[in-house]
Length: 275
Image 1 (cartoon, rainbow, N blue to C red):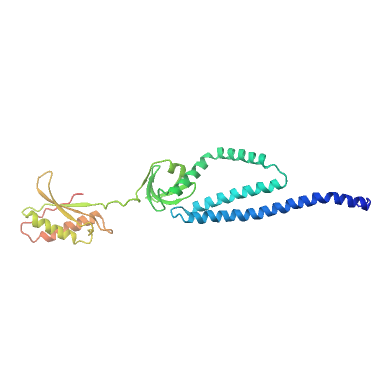
Image 2 (cartoon, rainbow, N blue to C red):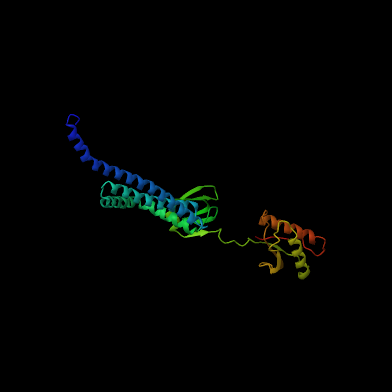
């Protein structure tokens, strides 16, 4: 090339200049598209996340997931625009990407179904971390909820991983949504020779004064007949205190009633409690 006549060399350079300038402009345009595209993708991701932050019930993981979807969607358009700057036909490329996406979707349809179920669980929130639930035959406390699986810890401290497709597609029982009524217990007494009305008021006063019996709702005393002997019985219905049990509360009531009526000459020593 350098052995040629300088005039011919200048002619070759002048002939190549339009091509060099055109390619340089394409490169600059591609770089400009990449810079602007990355900026728009970041702004779009931040806009989506900030918009979803105004919705209190959405999980932080789900907000990030939707933000990333928008970001990658914008970046895909940016890449196609860059390729078109170099004369590459993006129509055929989009068709190839679509076919590849379809093949990948068919191969991972089980995993994608768990992903879709995880998104639905994070949106509608039928349960939260720490709730006591029963699903797919597993009864325990929810430890973690991800896009693909749910972790439940049973009462025996056993970790159970359930795919979200099985969680979303099965009946779910959540024991933590509505407050359950307090569990009540009973203590029964036979006090022969006692006048029912004052004895009932006295037993009620004694039962309500015990620390192992919850004050709200208060203990109540009703009258009943023994199914075997037809004898009159005093039935104390109570709710055990938070730090107590039904057995401890029943035992304290038996002891307190016994102490209250032992001075009475007509009180019987026969006192029993039924579950």
